[in-house]
Image 1: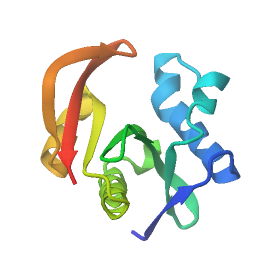
Image 2: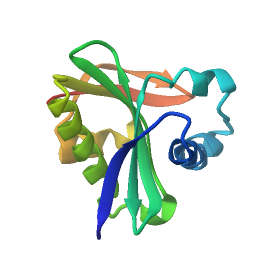
Image 3: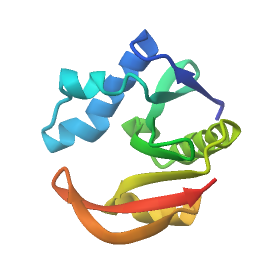
Length: 145
């Protein structure tokens, strides 16, 4: 499976396509939609897209907390492409990219259902107690790059 990964510019057609994927996978099942304010707040974030044969198959957003810390959020893989290792490869690419940019730690708020994946496949560690976000249990997870 040939995958390509790239950082796509904010407000580009490519980045707008990632919003659609994120909506379909992460928001719609919860009955949520993005607001204009939420999307505008991502202007300074890094938007990573993954493509297979030219088609968008996965994406994520990286938000800089400071010179050392990045928050990974909004990880989405197209439904037909899930459980094929695409998410893992995309996140590993984001780790390498972040390391090259000088970041030291990546963290995320992982849904309870995804925590095992982050821990076993990607080497993240749970930090602190579980908490509720968007109506479901989450864990703060961190990884040293």
